Amino acid sequence: MNQEHSRSTRAIARLIPRETSGHDVRVLSPTGLTEDDLGQSEFVYASLEELSRHLKWLDDDYRSGKLSRLETRARSIVMLADQLGLRRVGQVAADVVYCIDDPNEVALAATLSRLMRLITQALDHAAGPPISAF
Figure 1 (cartoon, rainbow, N blue to C red):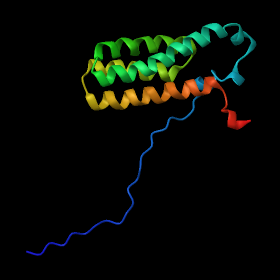
Figure 2: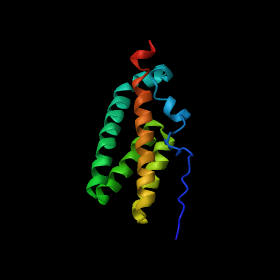
Figure 3: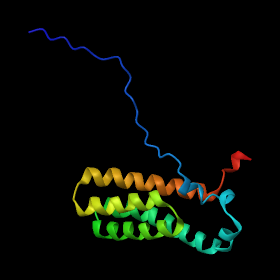
Figure 4: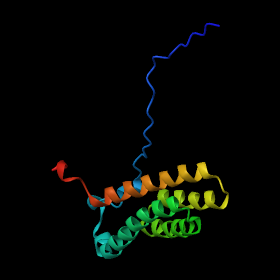
């Protein structure tokens, strides 16, 4: 029997997940701060530092399979995001808790990845423009 293998010459599309920049993330930009915000800068900086620690720990907890710690961390992120005005970060962190409660590994991985992208984006905006922008 003679089988003919046909190969498709189409290129494979590479998917690169990106989050659109929302208003809540721009609020943390140093150029978007008002005089009232500058008075609370110590609180904002401490909260952003805590958020950055949670970002690292999220990945560690997920990789080591410590779902109870991951859930506790996601709940903490919900509260931090609420204090900082990061509505989308808080919503996605709550979705991570939901994915842990309803064990769906694929949904958890996708939602956790989105949460990590949103936190990274928020921290990048809070850091201000890169030096190359000057």
